[in-house]
Image (cartoon, rainbow, N blue to C red; front, side, top):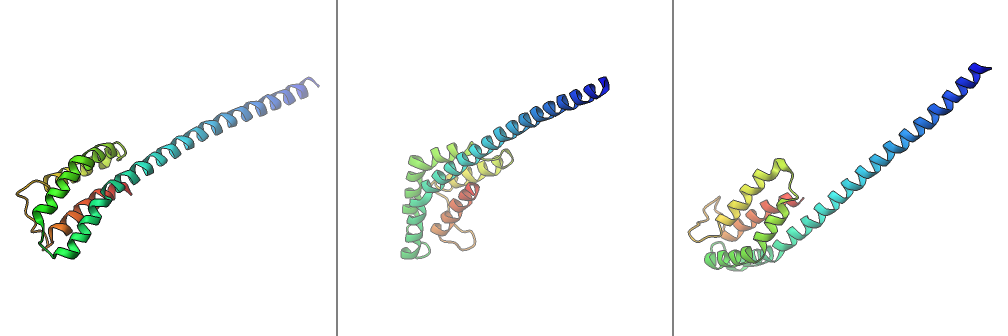
Length: 148
């Protein structure tokens, strides 16, 4: 009889212990899921703000490309993009950097530096017979690829 009571009490104790361990593990997993969802939500919000900051300039470049031909308005385009860079894009590029994976940061920094460098006077577009507008559209789309 005494052994039956030991067996039953140890079974009950093991059941309670297993139940509480399961609750603890489920709680920790739920917290991890919540943190991951918050991280994804924050990235999506930052990515949409990042993409939206470039939308007016992309619309301008696409409109300019269709109206002025292949090489029209090089200096005006550069000046417009440089002003937009100073007012909007520099801050957005810095803010969005915090959401980039650590392994992608060098590539992101290189794209950012290349985009900024090409906004200064003296840069000539002779890559693959592109117009300046097409070149800058490609540059901006390269930056926006990090926001996917």
